[in-house]
Image 1 (cartoon, one colour):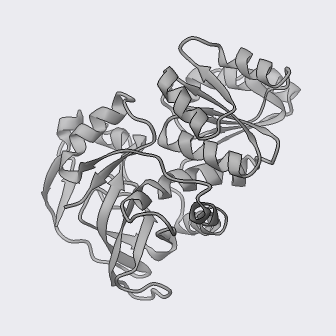
Image 2: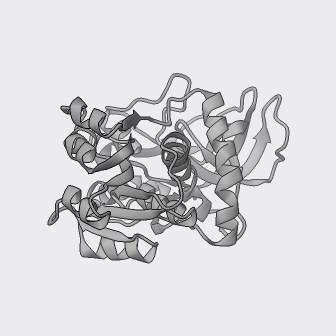
Image 3: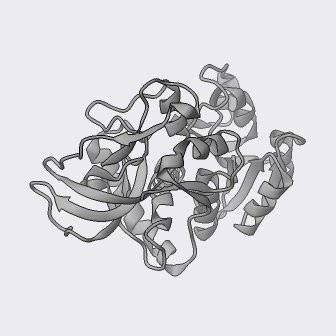
Length: 326
């Protein structure tokens, strides 16, 4: 088969489409013939040499895919060859075939194409696990989403609105804010021109955000704490703004606030399977009803992964960028 490999870490040109051995499904795994994968920031970090796959995972980038089951490994039940699926991966999505633990498979939702489904697993599992399973966002609470026009952001807006919350977003252009508004965002903040702490306070009559979904890390840590409401929860899922910040513990104590920081890729199989099961139970009906949908900016051939990485690194997209297998 063909896959995107990374012979040496570097820029987008480090991604090489080449022949590699076919994967073989092990105990509890299925072999998926990939229809499409999607680009995530973690793929860019892996390409740069700063985010290695977990032990035993595929060395190729790609944290989600869609496709058809080509073979079942030992001990797999509930799935059949030919089933159309999408999957949460630890790696290997940028390839024509990938072996996937059966607990990380999801059926393609009703009303969506096989390709569209590739835009779902990583973002839906990330949002659901952090915003709802960890931070426990409730109806009528306010969620602040940093990077509202990203794949994570566009899904967070829709899920929070579908479950009755109010949503504020930050983004860097008017076009991106308008797209967020189309998805249901109530409060639009241009982080290049506005102070998100002041804006969220004004929009909530001084209360602040009950939950903040943050992809920036250190750069926003202090201001995120300032923007929290009493009993607020800050969920950190990225480090685009650095890894080390100063925390005002007094301010956090004063708000009886909580901070969580999670990643999805390196979790044990059982934890991933539990998240996938929760997503299937709670989110898949919303997708089937049309209340939530993946936002796909564009599709590129998988062999052109370098161009897709350039696009995502430049933040020149809204939602997800897909890589389509031959």
